[in-house]
Image (cartoon, rainbow, N blue to C red):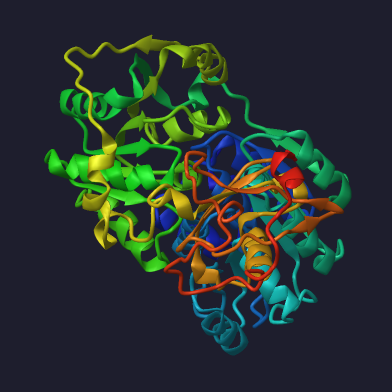
Length: 507
């Protein structure tokens, strides 16, 4: 169906045609009229089906030429926030009066506050944490908001933002139209929908062959020490313009990038420790091909639309197998053919059947001969510096990395957990350089070894805290007089260490 048949404003329609949008996709045909009617909506569709236009077209159709914040759009990552904002600017038919503004952490909040107060943007596109902060401060008034859209809802829940989203809705108080957009609809989304949506219209784009990206999938069985050699062989034997290498740990992104650069690839590490300006520069350089291999954690697996990615390599099996689908979906976009590889050990081959089920495609074996063993540790020093990811790797100093028996099941997301830790350990935000959260526990990297581990109570239980390197003999629990080069000292340093009974307990 043409956009001309969707009863859009003439100015909006002309702008769509001007930028080359003529044919509406299934999700756009079904959602745009319902959103225009003011109905609450749930849209479920795979990557590449036009989900973003399905909600921003009706938002622009219905905003008024008033200097008020009328629409909120929430997305899980800064990159997706910027991508949505760019798409709004692209089809905005009246930028002099109607304009959008993107907000997220990593940028001085006072600059954002001053901008909002001065210009009162029509549409705010934001990550959950920063939006909640501005709502708490009273910077964003909810009185004039007509709708709120949650894009990639399933990802936000996976990232631990459920509590933040609930607090945001507490400010909105069910006064607005609520739009959910997601690739999957788990039980958690249904629960939130029942609480905050009113009889929502549901539309699902079925995963038929026409909607699926064309991706050839391969696996190769390797030992961990052979992975770098296998990666080099894959990239050398397969022609590509752009490639993304996914791994699970931040420290590995830098080591892999350093290895690839030594072997004549133009590689950069991309992970959560990067400052915002560096992230934006990297994405820009990658789009242009100045960097042709992006080594990334799963931060890139959802929401970033980069054309011409020919190859995706899964250096590690994802912690959550659902992420495999989103990882390989970075290639094969816009009706092109992509190629994906996954490295598995012999005892991980069980996962291949599950991945085949999730992608509804066969994963064929890719054999590599003459593999050699390479120790990635030798690239630690070479990976330091801004060009290879800035900041610290997760295992760069294992004595500074701690196991903490709290996770997303305890109601934390990375932002709120960091605030909690700063308060409990009496440290600055900048002293915590990495957080890796699971359901029931987390790993936290500090910029120096703690002098003394405090006793933390949470929900009437003592939280287990250990130096994560079990081979270390200098855990603060066991060595109360350890002297650290740290620039900070926790306020608990004079408290007696845990009793042995706490050391043996697991929570």
